[in-house]
Length: 178
Image (cartoon, rainbow, N blue to C red; front, side, top):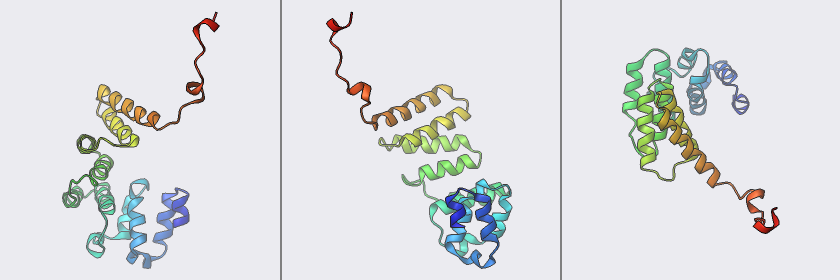
């Protein structure tokens, strides 16, 4: 399963895990299956593998709890999904994860709110987080907000680049240019 994971083949990851029912009781196998559940054609297969009681059988990290919430939503159990999300605190470290989960669950308004809250309180936000916010705003039809987020992402990316060969060249004095 790890080999398929490295090759970014979520369907084959799941197929490999399902082939051995004993892996249902393996923490690593369960968290891997949960992490790929939004990428497989039939998320119900993931739920069948991990079991609806997975949250009681394992002490799942926040990322896996949110993966489980997304899975429950994809499998038509929105109330269970909301119950799982309600158990995740809106802390600085959890806000980007919550935003991604909300996006995967189709709630882009809430995803944008969570990510905006995170970025407002985290001036050192990453370019990828600003890019994600721009994409959320774009999906919500907020073109101006999306453009501002995209521009900020680009500014962060270019600020990390070394000087280019062109900018490092000494300027040519005006009298030389005729």
